[in-house]
Image 1 (cartoon, rainbow, N blue to C red):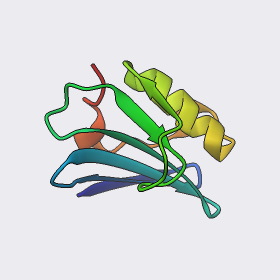
Image 2 (cartoon, rainbow, N blue to C red):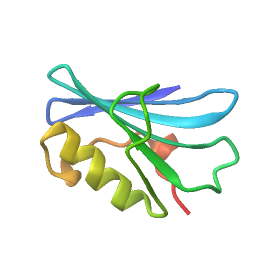
Image 3 (cartoon, rainbow, N blue to C red):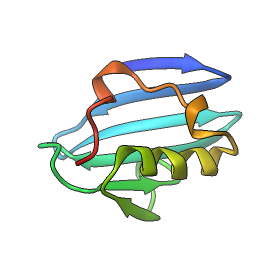
Length: 89
């Protein structure tokens, strides 16, 4: 597990038995980006780590854009822990 914080946003990266999971939190609002454990599938954007999938993306930048929208911030404001930088296809 690794984490990062910037611009009032906390990010946490974790790996479960099934997937890689990047979760953002800002003022009680959350957004999550998930990918299969092997790191080759599309990214799933969810409102919470265990919430229903809202959309799938090939590119990490597009998934971050959607996550940022859920939090009401710009994508470039999202801190990304080093372990999560290689997410996406």
